[in-house]
Length: 238
Image (cartoon, rainbow, N blue to C red; front, side, top):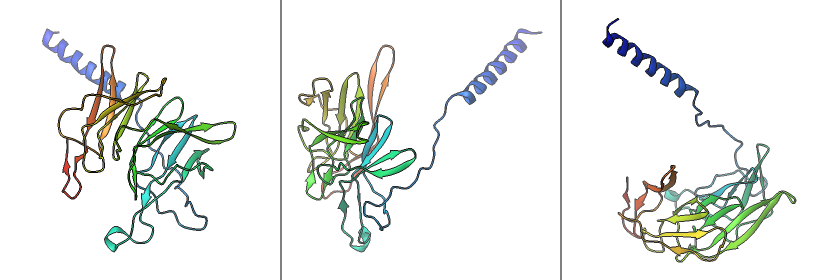
């Protein structure tokens, strides 16, 4: 058999093998869960935008959020923020006896070994710089709320990741506009947020944030979002 035919056959075999291995690779699976119940017995649940949460001790935690309970925005309805917290246990949601320290939505959330860290956000009174942790206590089947140092500035629509013992927060809107802010806190010391050099490019909020770790590097990516100032049209970002 000619060498060219042998190489062509090997190429087909390798491609077929790669395809088979790709089919065996784990894939993201989506499952529909039960809807969040209403925080008020007997009322229908409207759903919530901008909820805060994560996972701790195998319990899914989802709190806060906002909606329009008495009319949609284009109908002149007012936005309402919430402080209730839901727990997903054995496939069903239940309300926690613990509530957020204030009605809150549109902050950053990151799951850590000690609990879910809630960072910033906003409500009808403005943008928050508060940071706190929701920790699920198995002995009492409910949450503990632990205060953390405030952010150096109020931020909503921000994002956060955890890497190598630090939580990093980047971007978001302060009281006036999108920012290039970049902060981190040491989860062992929990003393203060360290201000890092502002990230390059346009200010952004409502973005995604991810960590890529390899054997010789660690990278933080900011993806998408928008550059927005109060009273101006926002600019979508790649």
